[in-house]
Image (cartoon, rainbow, N blue to C red; front, side, top):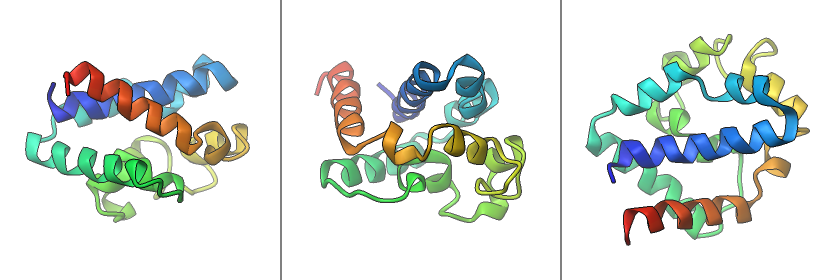
Length: 133
């Protein structure tokens, strides 16, 4: 499985969890077809670097800010001004009051409650099992 596909699976699983918690519209706000397209167009080396960094954080039980596990933040090395995700989702950066990311954060009462470390560990295991590792 390509690393671009792993990143898409990672985001799709998070989207599905958001749908379960706060509904379809919220899930669609979080990860759109345009977001999926951006990830699918990444060069494989870039996708591998992003996925590996996220996977290592999860496997090392690093607990941190939601952006640590967000492929788009990793893609831009936290340079919010260059982030296409932020621009597509209504903000100069994700924490803008009018951004989808911020609205979802408030709907979920924080991303850490919706996505505990256990969720991420199970998700990585599922992705790797599909990979046949």
